Length: 298
Image 1 (cartoon, rainbow, N blue to C red):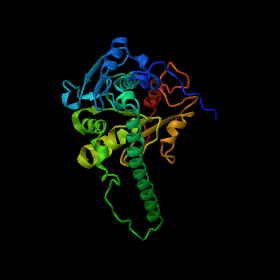
Image 2: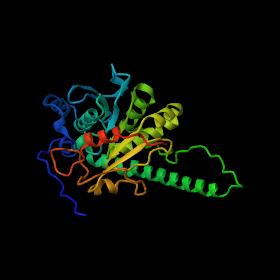
Image 3: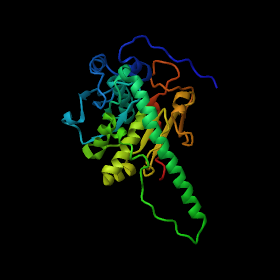
Image 4: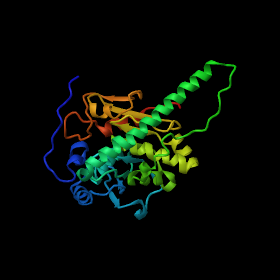
């Protein structure tokens, strides 16, 4: 299968990768300018309205958030190399699909920390996710073995997190911000991530399960997750996860768990969501299709 050339975008400022991977033209000139000015802020919280009712509110940290709505259409997390600009662009696409305002957790500081974000995202978080997914697969295999013997009752073992000893991931500003939002600060109808943002969602859910188990049960049962560009192991209690991949996305495939199936394949699409460039994943269109489908049974 032919892989498209890496699309180049002029410009070398801190938001250069936002303009490559995300649909920044969905934002107004005023929003674009404001977000470029405040681009370097991992853990920043954004409130983004849909295109036909545009709005943007920015908080440097969750502690500074005032006037949050009790409920949002979604909480989104963008990926490696994104700053506030890319996070807002992804949120705008999602808000357009879901017809309502969206909260975004900023997961990086753009070009300023692309190297450290890549290492943290795909070596630390990715390594933890691989451990967890392997543990889940082994657990399912043992359950199947017990089920084959009708005379032996399977032992009841509590749910554990095999990566819980690695607390470094929990100190990440984006993971902490998302976990605290999910702990009851607001309600959200969906969780949507792209690339490394999916790893942030997974880590935040595992942290929520450890620290706020009752709240985790509600989120896991009520809030579906849509991942774009990387298939990531979520806690097994999560009822609905929809994994979306472009069929040309070798980068996303490299950072995915190979035994997690793709639920939605986007034809002739690479890793980016920028609708100005060829081979993009049209987030709004794809998400509209997912929302219109009847949810699958757990």
